[in-house]
Image (cartoon, rainbow, N blue to C red; front, side):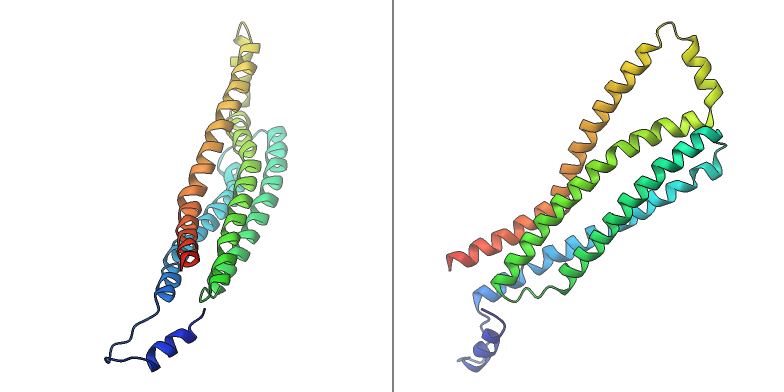
Length: 205
């Protein structure tokens, strides 16, 4: 099942009109979802680059030296994660961009590559969640250290703050995980389903 069938359709035309085999039309309909996926990958790459720019935050905010070291320690780890993800995005983009979907077998491969990338996306994004929470604490703590320490010392029950942080982290984790799943489904899963639908229709022929 490939584009040689187009040549056969051309050679066997009877009325001067070319009839493209139905399965070829279905296979070619899968190219549109791949176009949307490539756009999504570009957005992901820009987002990862934006995360890398976060390292410039201390340049614009006066940071306490102790928290500055901690900030860049966390930043260094997040850079490694983002760099790894950028490599995965680049590799997957090449696969999608260069994949010839002229046959059902290639369509199968593309579908499972998309599903695999979705799992990689979810895992790496989940690993990145704590970094965002730590940044949310470190940035105000590092720039307004003395003021925040005075507020904590003035509290009658400082343990309430720690309980609040734990609850906040759990809510942050739950919210981010829900967004990750929704994002993966919206920008990749939806189009993977469209390709799977084409594959299922080809099975029925």
